[in-house]
Image (cartoon, rainbow, N blue to C red; front, side, top):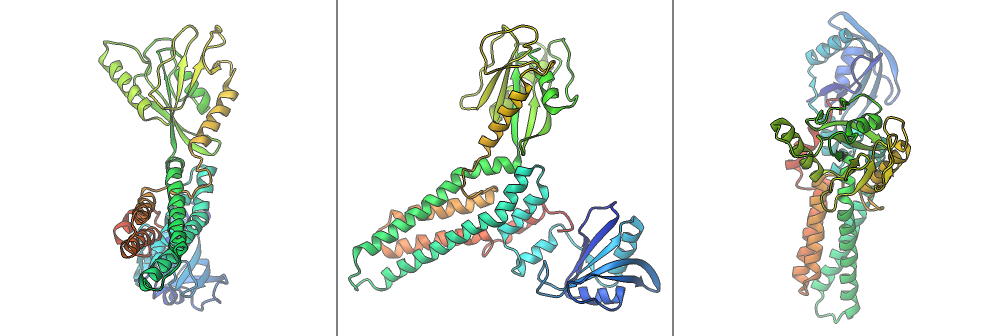
Length: 423
């Protein structure tokens, strides 16, 4: 079936529409008349049933040299709503149908123009909010796929050597051949485990971090949130207990997306609503990636959950100085805010640093590599050549799932449903 969809957002001066499928070029002829040379744009008057619909640039991409691997045509239309409605109606009447979310990319995968890792990286690139997310998605389009390809080639060589030991058991092969095989398995397993160790940082960058501001009532939490956000997000009042619920804003810290959350002041209270706010504040703190512990002069800092990285901030330094804390600041005068932002940017980078390992940013990717590493660990524990060879084949099967070579039907809907219609 031939499908179509706009590749650009609505409301601009130009709308780019893609047609893909067996009738794409025939439909383009019906609308535009003579086709231009492949991959050369040409101005054409688009007509249907005797009506002129638009004047547009037409470019054709015959199979297999197109994004989807099918015959494709692209129309650069004027961006008005009426133009799009008329063209969509004509395309439907000529036998095409609107594409579903991610359907172009799904066809590219089926036709060998894209693998599953590339499709996931493309989805992450489309969804990137910050430069660091963009850089990770671009790296995954190339670096991660190169790493996986390298692992698969190493594994292919290891399986070949293991098969040789199985096929020629009576050839009195030197013992160093088996030792070299075992060493190769261990090196490959260690590379995969390094990538698994870096996966939480990669996933945090893809999903974004949560930094939570914690402290007693009137410790300056809401004022600090507003200062870091550069906007009037939270109500600021001298009355204790003003903040009753978690209130957050998305900020960009050195290219890392961070959800910065203000919370209710921590204290004992008989007010049921405020008590619920305190409970939610503690729950947010328990799952936070980083904590900003605030205390006004003369007050004690709250205790962070064990193991959670944090900064102790002595607030309201314009009113009085007080010992203790990692940084003194005044959100009212701006004192210490630049230093705080620098410390937070460094914390965000540290929490998302994969230290050069392959960036496994999705749970599906982590699961496949974990299964491969576990199979290699099992192979290392076996002396029997046939059993070891079977574990190596299980590892190869897991890596094939990762790239989308086999067994991917159950994950395709989940992957491509996150795409926009034009992809």
